[in-house]
Length: 600
Image (cartoon, rainbow, N blue to C red; front, side):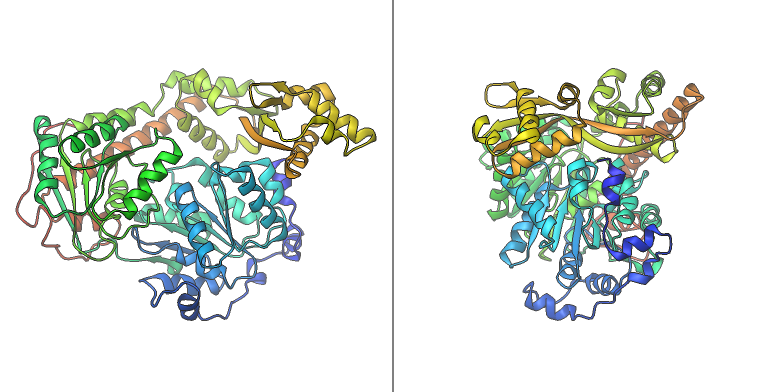
C-alpha cells in the first residue's frame, strides 16, 4: 500500500466531507468545556500553571492551531498532555527525542494515563502493545518519531485514527533556515492535513522571529496564537573567557575545585574529547562520566539516570546529552568547546537552574576551536560535481522508483543528511513526490517450527506461506527474507508477503526486524536541464553554509562580552526590552575579550 493510499484510509464523516471537497476545518471545531486548573491539580498533581501554559491550553481547547515558544525547561509537554485527557480522540506527538518519549510515557503511566511510543528502540512486545492500542483507539497519547510517518506498515495502521491534536516537538526543525533543519519535518504539515488533525500544536525552545514565521506559515497559526514566554532566566549567570590551549583543561579544573559542588554538565564537540576530559577529571579526584552517541543505548541510559539521581555528578558530553532530561538542580554548564549556534547554546544552558536557584553557564573558549567548527560546516557542503552526480543518478530512474539514501551517499560522496536535504528540495520544487518507503529485507527468528505454522492453514494459503518460508536464507540466529527476490520468486505483490510476515509475528510464531530501508519516489516532472538544476542545488547548499558560519559568528560575538551577554542572547530571539543583567562577564567588566582567529 503506498503512502498516499495508506493516508487516505480515513473513515470519519469529517474526512468524507473533505474528500468530497466541501470540508472546512471550522465545521469540526469542537470547543471543549473543561476546567484546566482542576485537571492540573487532580490528574497531574501540580498547583499552578507556568507562564504561557494556560494561554496555550485554552486556545487548543477552543480548537485553534497554536505555537508555543518556551525556554528549555519551560513546561512545553504539559501543553499537550493535559488537553489529551479531555479531547475526544488521540493526541499524536511527533518528537525526534527517543529518551524524552520513553521518560514521558513512563511518567504518564505512573499517573494512570494511557500512552505509547513508536520509535526505533522498541522491543517486539512494546511495538505490538502500541499497535493494538492504535487499532482499538484506547491510547490517548501516542509519541511517534518523524521517520515512522514514512513507514508503510505504520501508515496503514493509523489510517482510521481520530487525531484530535497533532503536536510537533522541536518544531524549529521545519525551517530550512533554522539551526537544526530536518527534511522530514517539512512533510509534517501535509501529514497533519491528511490525518484530519483537528488542531495543531508546534513547540520549540529556540525559534528566532524568522523561524517562528516559518512555523506559523507551515501550520496555519495566527499571530495571536503564537505564545512566546521570556527567554532569559535571571538566575542564570552567563560567563565567558578566552584561553590558550595549554591552559584549557587547567582552567576548567580550577573552576570545579574552587566553586561549590553541584551537578555539572561539560559540553564538548567530539566524542573523543568527552572521554579524555572525563578520564582527566577522574584522575584528579573528581568523578566524571562521558556521554556521547558512540556509546550503546543501555550505557547512555545508565549514565543519564545516574546523573539525574546524583546531587553533584559531573558528565562530559557531546550535544547528544540532555534532550528532554528531567533534572532541576544542574548548577553548572560549561562549554569546553563552543556551540555551533546561539540556538544550541540556549538549549544547553537552559538545562541549568530550572529550580530557580543561581547557576553558572560559562564558555571556556580557545580561539582555534573555531576552525574545528568551521570544518564541520564546510564538510556538509558537497562539491558542484557531486551535486551533478546525484542529479545524474536520479535522472536515470523509472517513473516510480525506490532508492537507498545510504547508497546514494556512497555513490555521490555526499553526506547522508545532505542527500536527504537535496531530495527534499526536489520534492519542494515539484520534481518528485515521496511515496511509501519499504524495507527490502526482513530479519526473522522462528519461535515455533515451520510445521507448527503450516499446520494452521490449508489449501492455497498453506501453499503460499510454505513458499514464503522457503525463501528464507539461514544465518546464525536470524533468517533473512529478501522481499524483492521473494516477490519475484512467488510471483506476487510484496504487500502480500509483508502481511503474511506481520500475521505470523502478531501470533508470536516469529520475531521480526526490518533492514535495508529504501525510499520511494515518483516523478512529477522530469529534469530537462540537469546541469542547471545541479548548480541551483549546489548554490542553495552554499547559502546554508554561509548561514551556518554566520551562526558561529553570533556565538563568538556573545563570547567577546562587549555588551551584556543576556541582552544579546535575548535580542537574538526577538526580545529587545530586557535591561542589562548585571551579572554576566560584560556587566562585571571582564570583557571585552580578544578573539584573533578570523572566520573562513
